[in-house]
Image (tube, rainbow, N blue to C red; front, side, top):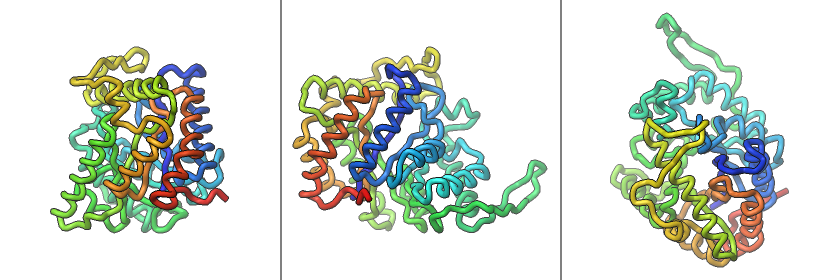
Length: 352
């Protein structure tokens, strides 16, 4: 199991504005690289302060210039929002710009608010995902693909740009659906799951349900699985609750964005409480928030239950002030990682 750093890049109250969010991300990725994290991941969302990372490929290409070794992942490219002919070329180019450090995470998306503004039907997202991937797969791995011209004639296109990593960069997919995963099986795609604010209890349930479905579908139930979890390392009870409030801010925005109608003020989501919203203390306990010993024990227990191949850590959630996020990541590196490696083996990669 290796570690990842997730960058959602939400904007709430960053004192340096949008540029502050960007600068914070550079700082966190640089620190994660120093600590031996394997991959830095970048989200994709549009039109609101939920995330300013509108292109994970752009972020990966940009961060290649601010890092030396860490892999740069897309978490995830929302395939239905793209013209696949253009996207195939951009994936290949970014893999080359990063000197083969790209990790390709793809998904179908879920936010109706975004799909509606791209004139797309969110209910068709899985169908479009497979259609677009069929084209991208051929373009990237064969250097040739067929499509229809504007007057509905079949045209063949040769693609000069192919990935540096052959036949493809490592592939991750945000689904546990057996039928969808079998479509990506030839590339040994890793399913990627997160439970959001529901944290550990729901994450374990999701992993168990996924493996049961895979077994029933005749798949290998031991298929590698990547997970994502909110983490904040602090000795302060007040700071722990503050972190939980930041996670609650993200949860409210996610709840709001599931609908086509979202109340916004200048692209800032006006997110009210969602149905059955828990207290911040419940979110704190669901997520991995606490001192180093507690955080290490929680992760070790999760790993024992889920056995993930990749553990993606979400540190700067809800536009958390960079000082608090950095201190948390530093304590994680200095105090948590040694405890993890003593219990479950090496989770970092060599820095040099």
